[in-house]
Image 1: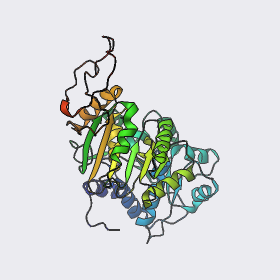
Image 2: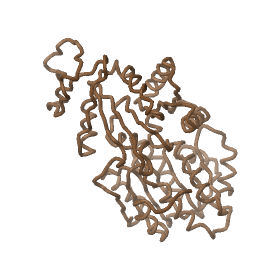
Image 3: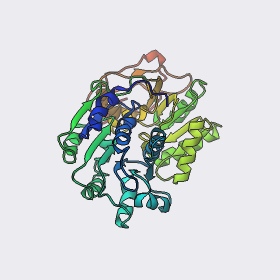
Length: 391
């Protein structure tokens, strides 16, 4: 598979995982966290008799479940161990057979797994290993009730591992409820984003973001571009606009059927679509080699989401570009991202004949970042009331 040496997160976690210790592993996206828990699972289960569920990997999205299942099959190709992804949006028959003894390793999203558990298809009495993949997302308020219900059905004597690219202190505290004396492995805790990413920003009025994006897409070096929006509606609208401009584009979000999502990812992976427009459901589920650029069409509300978005490029020690289009109303969220990163994101020069703006006061403080005014085309606008920030 091309592996020569372990990555730092693999080197730090695999020895403890093979010994059966509970652990929390934190490292940037694209550094091999999936192999860091799948390899120990395969090692520990090699000599177990088949027909029982020994390991469960919980993931927040269907894409991550399919990604981990595919990786498991490649790593375990020469073993007798079988894996199965259990997720919503598809039929339950094949999943039921796997849960009844057709697979030793189950990779599942919480909602669909609970559906099977309520029907009595699942026997966890032999379970030895639990993995919470993308642990910060798995333990947030959206998934926590389902995760608690699943964990109550698992044997108390088990190994539990939690992996994520970001691990806020409150999530670590919450994770200690599920782990016993965990070993915490943090790789480069002072480096938040993937090291190979070049970060850029452009301050542009929201109504002109599509024009700026199309201007950037004229660059042939942008051969495989992942564009993130905040909402499903904006993703669909942007995809239609790009299609009208004759850009090869696919779209993926929570309202798309599983077959549509798979076709979009496969087309993007194979190069049939140059651009993939996605909501944050894809930020943790797109593992495509060679993504040249990530463009944040909308600034994410949570700084940690930015880390996962830009981590879709510069994977496996490669290089990648990340551009964020910052609207006037998004300055505060953008400032929070820079605070998390610990450095100021480079401001790109203004595009020719396209409007951008000079960032002014952000919230209750004056913006620290003023691009070269000679490079800025000011947008005429009314002077806002005094109680609002001036841009």
